[in-house]
Length: 220
Image: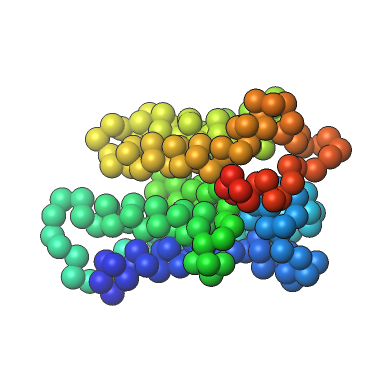
C-alpha cells in the first residue's frame, strides 16, 4: 500500500459516524438534529443513555488507535529517511481525527469534536502522556461538571504532557499543539456558552443548546 493509501484509509476510518449509527439503530433519530447536534459521546449520553455513550466513546477511540497501529506496517514505497515512517504514522493519526470531525460518509455535514479519536491516537503513540491528560480531564470534570471545559483543559494540557514524557525533539509535540488548537476550534460554540454561563453540567437538569445553533457554529 502506498503512503497516500494509508492516509486515505485513516481518514475513512475516522469518518465512520458511530454516534450517528447509534442514534439511528437505537431510536431511529439523527443525533445531528437532537440535543447539541454533535456526533460525540456527550450528546449520545444525553440522548441515548450511558451504555450507548460508553460504546460510542470506545469505538471513536478505536478508530483513532487502530489505523496508527496497523497501517504503517503495510505501507510500501516509503521514501527512506530519518523519521519518515514516524511522520507517516502521525499523518495517519491526524487524518483519522479530521475524518471524525468532517466525516465523508455524512457528506462532511456534522461530525464530532475529535476528543475521543484524539485519545485513541495518543493511546497508541504516547500512552504515558495520554494518562496524564486523562487524569487532568477527570479532575477538571469533577470540579466543574462540564464536559466541554474538561475536554478543552485536557487538550491544552496535551502538548505539555508530550513535552514532559517524550521531549521537545519529537514531532509528536507539533502534532499535539495542532490537536489542542483543533479541539479549541471545534469547541468554539461551547466556549461561547461557557462565557454566557449556559453550558450544560453533568448531573443537572436541562439539555444542551439547540442543535440548529450548534450546527451553524460547528460540532465535538
